[in-house]
Structure formats: structure tokens, C-alpha cells
Length: 147
Image (tube, rainbow, N blue to C red; front, side, top):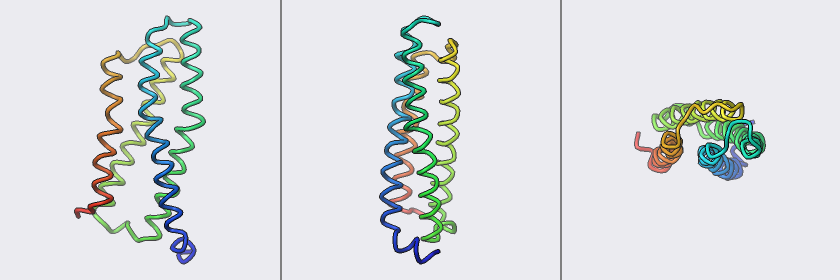
């Protein structure tokens, strides 16, 4: 099995990066869609349209991308023996945090779809920056492998 994974490592890596981009794009878009929903009254047609859009983003892009990123990432880590590297532990911790952020954000969008408004526009704008900041640190860890 290890030999097969080693022979397709570059394909695993390519897929991992492609679906990471999809996942992060979704995490950037979801808070923005929440901001757009804030302009519509609870129970309105506009709110329903944004709730549908957010649901599709979650079901078609975000969650499938998250699963594929994890599967391919763990396959690469197993193939290359990254589990003993310090940089990988740091990256894995950040990816776990981003996965938790994903889950929390999905919960907030579901509340909004029910007519609740748990977050303000300012909070949503700040939250929208979280994936980008985490991405910066993760990319530095992966490419520089500082420890």
C-alpha cells in the first residue's frame, strides 16, 4: 500500500491543494453571504434565497472539500512519514482548528437560516479574515518546515 501511495504522491498533493483552495474559498464566501442575509428581514423572500445559497455552498463545496482535504492530507502524511515532524504537528493543529471553525460557522449559518441573527456585520467581517490568517501560517509551515 505504501508503495502505491508513494507512486501517486504528486497526484495526492495536487488534489489536496486543489480541494484546499475550494474549502478556503467557501470559508471566505460563507461569512460574506451571512452579511448579505443581514439586509433581509427574518422570514422574507430575500432571507430564504440567501439561506438556500448558503446551504448549497455548504453541501456542494464546503463539506465535500473538507472531507477530501482530510483524506488526501492524511494519505500524504502516511506516505511521507510526516507524523514524526514538528512542523506537521503544528499544521495538523491548525487544520483541526480550521475544521472546528468550519463547523462553528456552519452552525451560525443554520441559525441565520432559521431567522436568528447571532452575529453582527462587524463580527462577520472579522470572522471572514480567520481562514486567511490560518492559511498564511499553514503555508509557511508546509513550505519552510521550520521545526
